[in-house]
Image (cartoon, rainbow, N blue to C red; front, side):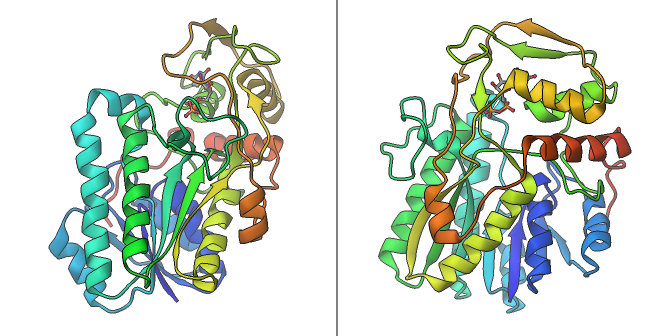
Length: 343
Ligand code: UDP
């Protein structure tokens, strides 16, 4: 089967390509390179031994997207492409709504015109908002995210639910990611944020490799075991496997739209993550305690029961695996991918 992966050159997309290819699918990547690097494709070809066509395209380019589908070579879509920086989304809300929503409208239109109705959508734990009880369960309502980024995920979930309700050809998976970290064990691909990393793991990795002076822990007075925030970190390769499992499941299930949490069900604190990363690196890392980051929730993690039961999927890689693999990627690629190459 031929699978179009939007955002396939990005952090999660690139890792997702690997199990799709290993399962025998032909993968085509569509990516705008706004937040990714074409160099990833050569690395993916090294890892998979497959040729992976790459189309540079903004999803909002409707004519360009139509040409991709017109080849007749797309059977299903994994839609990961989106702007994703939570903080930035509050200062550039229009850009986020415009990009994430219109990109999705354009994609859905092209899919409908070409009779492609199997879709795996990249959603987020942020859709549960501030009031959901932990562990988060998929049936929780109402979904109200606290950032424009999160709201784009809530809105797209709603749109996809309505689309599947109106037209029984659609088979749609909504994958609510918890905190993806880690890298492929080859050390060839990994997370390569532009500028100062917003997220904990890439920041830690850049401290370890000497690109940042020290980690600032955002608050140690939360009502958690050690006072630092707790999250459900999962290995990006487990997350990648989750996309394949979801694609298989939607094709085997009755039509419709269904949400699955992808997480481990375990909470790990910032301090525990720092200590685990130190074990991977083999020495202590400099840090300081800073003020809380506005908007951070003290602790959340998922109930992964539904994904385990219905997708036959389980996030089994450990926190130590996550740190060891991140460190392998970062130490072998201290500056990330080479300068942007044109493909
Ligand atoms: N965090 C931190 N220092 C950093 C980046 C993150 O202490 O430089 C903390 C942050 O407060 C949160 C946790 O690490 O409690 C995970 O943050 P991240 O941004 O990676 O994920 P999210 O907030 O989206 O769950």
